Amino acid sequence: MYFTSNIKILRKRRGRTQDEVAFALNLKRSTLSGYENGVAQPGIDVLISFSGYFNVSIDTLLKIDLSKLSESQLGELERGYDAYIKGSNLRVLTTTVNSRNTENIELVPERAKAGYTTGYADPEYIGELPVFTLPFLSDKKKYRTFQLKGDSMLPIPDGSWVTGEFLQDWMNIISGHAYIIFTLNDGIVFKIIENNIRSSAKLVLYSLNPLYEPYEVHISEVKEIWKFVNYISNELPDPVIPEKQLIKTVAGLKHDLERLKNKVGRDISDITSEPV
Image 1: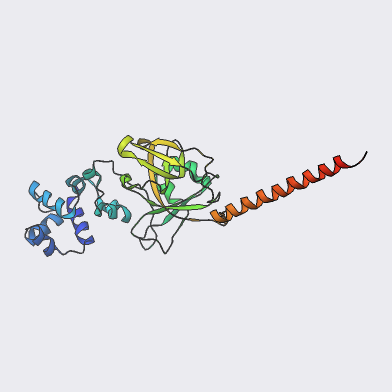
Image 2 (image 1 turned 180 degrees about the horizontal axis):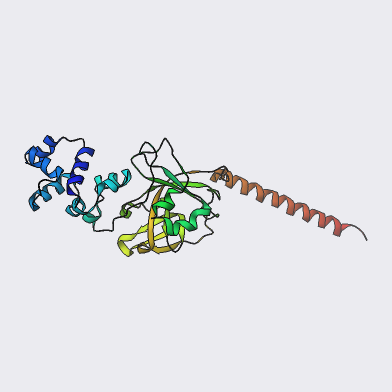
């Protein structure tokens, strides 16, 4: 069991002293110290009290080694996304950190996508991916960058690098927003999502390019979802003509077409009126 180390980790992350936690839980400080040092074993009433105080399930306090979780995973846990409380599978993400113990942003280039299908949970595979950081992103969240392939998300150009924030709770998917979705069947795709998890346990995936038809995936097929943050490209997207300008352009083309038809009509009339 990991109870002794877990309550110490959670207490220190909250910036609480033993006296403060003991007072909140109606315990003696020496009793709390005994729990943290492993010289005393808590009863069920004490476990319930710790669970309520830290908003973490008893199963997590006892069974999950919190020291093995990354900063982003601990942050998700502290924000209430406890797998045992929510009744879902714990999504433990394999990640890397730099020398300052800050999580890297791993790059998954196009040539590495095939390996990601089998290596996404392999620390050795993830550890070999190139990494970088973006100073304007939060160091309390987990990000990963994937390279796009194809034209399904035009005007975002082929070859762009799309960065996403790891999404722990899929019920927080907002319909109409962009996400990076990883399934074993389709690999990594970047799509606009319609969230139908509650009604049918499915997601409808839409491309920005209207030439591509939307399609459904069952949530059981999904392994990871990353909320779109930004993209990096060395190409400018194609310009989008404003609606008024588009109407003006079409009107101009129609006018030119009418002039051409009239000119052709006059030329034919001149030819037929000439004496033979």
